[in-house]
Image 1 (cartoon, rainbow, N blue to C red):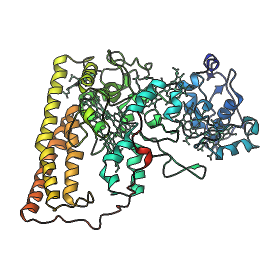
Image 2 (cartoon, protein in one colour):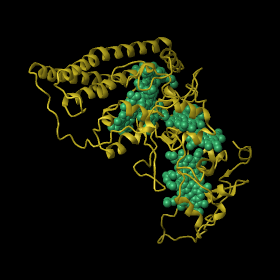
Image 3 (spheres, rainbow, N blue to C red):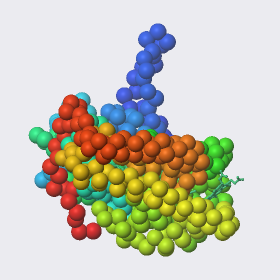
Image 4 (spheres, rainbow, N blue to C red):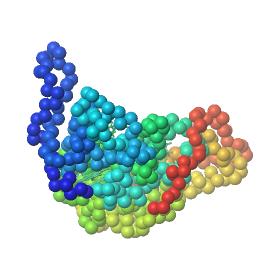
Length: 467
Ligand code: HEC
Ligand code: HEC
Ligand code: HEC
Ligand code: HEC
Ligand code: HEC
Ligand code: HEC
Ligand code: HEC
Ligand code: HEC
């Protein structure tokens, strides 16, 4: 970081700048004229960087205030520090050059002209936050597009439309950014999915959890930040959390938590009395360090069809040792709980995993294979025969909910939305499967399966790369 920039200080709220200084409006003609944000620059800054701030203060007062209230503004990190580009960068904003041909704006002249980009990637942030960016780059979050293109039948078998993917899957998982005619392609932008693939090759978007331009740790520490994506029938972590005692404590006492504790110092018992998603999965405590790799601290893949260890997850084997990771998570728990309490919790979790694998998943999978082998189910497409859908939902919906509910202390998800539903689905599935086998009858194939038009060519950007 430039020392000069660090030494100088921006004083916010020190002076009133009445730009435009229009006449006072009376009640009759009053419109929604926003109050100008109080702001003064009190030191040297490149003139190009001052231009961004001054012009955008008028053009986008909402965006400007977010930045002005951020720690970045406080530390003198300007628009230009993040949005700087080279003329030949593929993601440079060609349309922005026009802003320097304006007569209505003091700063809209050639004197201030510099190339900018709308995209600010983990690689850009890594100039000042190398550790966070490195941890993030090896996480499943960053690499999720690689993973889903390997294993997901919706994408691989083209069972949904490109538009359904854009408004669903890729909103959470991320798009592959693309420019068309000098503009960001609307099919890929706007997007802040966790695994967005950027034009500089980096993966992810830091604003998934730290929305711009506040970039606050407070926001990311709250469960709602994760709940944007971690919800719904197949991964209801936010619902599970809100049902748990930890969520109950958050609801009751969250207002008194010290959400703004300095990065890396947010401590159980000191700053909060019940953990959030971030406390258990990311923030440091005891000897466990803060990490932007959410795969750390996990000892199971409880989202997978067959529960396995993270290092045995073939599409993206974790470079971790599950025993060490489990000990790390336990150390988080023991900031507030005794060892017996925590060990007992894990004994139960392991039993749940075993029961799900042996009683539900393995027999259902065996039956599915039998149907394929006998030619009663057709392998070319997935989801166009009812038993395929039933099998999918057994592991992907209630099978996950049972395991997640048990892992994160939510009995309603472990049982009513979990194992209870597993039992029901399993029984119906077996009945129908055995009936087809008994009568040697081919399953009905939905010829009119709607909108199975998605592109099935795997984008080259999602191929594994050197990690
Ligand atoms: C004279 C006014 C002016 C100046 C100076 C200016 N901008 Fe802008 N900028 C705008 C306006 C207006 C827009 C919105 C254009 C639109 O909505 O089509 C914009 C858009 C942007 C965008 C989005 C571009 C896109 O393609 O979506 C970014 C990023 C941006 N500005 C950053 C900067 C940075 C960084 C600087 C300083 C290096 C800067 N601007 C200087 C007026 C300005
Ligand atoms: C700490 C880095 C950082 C700073 C400082 C910063 N930005 Fe951004 N800006 C971002 C990120 C990240 C995004 C989201 C882009 C993405 O998803 O790749 C963004 C997006 C934008 C956009 C497009 C978003 C939209 O909603 O249209 C504009 C315009 C913009 N910034 C202007 C500015 C201006 C003006 C300033 C200074 C007042 C500024 N930025 C300061 C990181 C920064
Ligand atoms: C030019 C250097 C620079 C760049 C580029 C930069 N940051 Fe920062 N960032 C800083 C500094 C310096 C601080 C510490 C400010 C402080 O402690 O007051 C900071 C603080 C933060 C914080 C902690 C805020 C808080 O509430 O305590 C977050 C989160 C953050 N940055 C995210 C990002 C993201 C995301 C990007 C990329 C979009 C980014 N930064 C780009 C220098 C930078
Ligand atoms: C609301 C956000 C959201 C949407 C929409 C969404 N996902 Fe996901 N997806 C997630 C989250 C969160 C997880 C992590 C689940 C877990 O670990 O419990 C996930 C997990 C996955 C996984 C498992 C990855 C692994 O490591 O095994 C695949 C594959 C996947 N999603 C594919 C898709 C596809 C394909 C679509 C669209 C048809 C889609 N998702 C739509 C949020 C979403
Ligand atoms: C999955 C959500 C999530 C994403 C995505 C994310 N962060 Fe964070 N970040 C957090 C949380 C939670 C904290 C607070 C950790 C703590 O309690 O100190 C944090 C803290 C930080 C801090 C403060 C220093 C620290 O390590 O505690 C910086 C800087 C930061 N993030 C930068 C980034 C950058 C750069 C990226 C993109 C590469 C990024 N973050 C992406 C959740 C996220
Ligand atoms: C923008 C969407 C989004 C947000 C926000 C988000 N996640 Fe995720 N998360 C995902 C997706 C998608 C996956 C699945 C990645 C995969 O397995 O391919 C995932 C996976 C995970 C995993 C499983 C990792 C593994 O190795 O199996 C954990 C744990 C996790 N997220 C925790 C968090 C936490 C904690 C937060 C908030 C601080 C958060 N996530 C915020 C989308 C999101
Ligand atoms: C009390 C601590 C705690 C809290 C709070 C918590 N989790 Fe978890 N989470 C766990 C434990 C323990 C596991 C199972 C770990 C293992 O594999 O050993 C887990 C598993 C997960 C997984 C499954 C990872 C996989 O791939 O199988 C995801 C995703 C996840 N948590 C996300 C979240 C989100 C999002 C929140 C907040 C809404 C949250 N967690 C809150 C402790 C917690
Ligand atoms: C910041 C402190 C804190 C952390 C960290 C924490 N817990 Fe808790 N936990 C609590 C408190 C407080 C309660 C409420 C106890 C009560 O019922 O009086 C609680 C309750 C529980 C319960 C009881 C749930 C119920 O509904 O009866 C379980 C089980 C539990 N925690 C397990 C864990 C595990 C496992 C971890 C680590 C993965 C963990 N906790 C991390 C503070 C914490």
